[in-house]
Image (cartoon, rainbow, N blue to C red; front, side, top):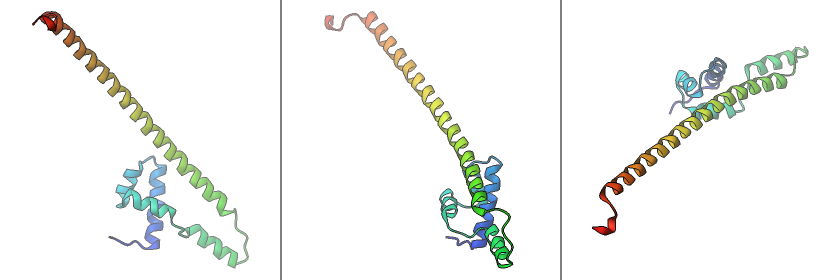
Length: 131
């Protein structure tokens, strides 16, 4: 089991965000980072300090007001991520529904062929009680 430092995690999370914004799936992002999907999910839930937060703290020490509240920018970032994930999930659901419909149609076709064969066989052999 490999332990990653906080800096490595922050860098990999930033890279994951870039790849996700580029339209890569979560599996592709994880392969590029060399971590599992669960690890990435766990890292995103960690209360790690953001690099911007360090900059804002230094500005506060210098008595300079921050340009904008970090909460709004973080919320926009989270909203973008959720929109991308929502698009990917909708595509997956659509693909699964189409596959389900194809399988149901194939099952109906197969059962109608089989019942048609049984009817033809009974017509050729005649009634079963006469034998």
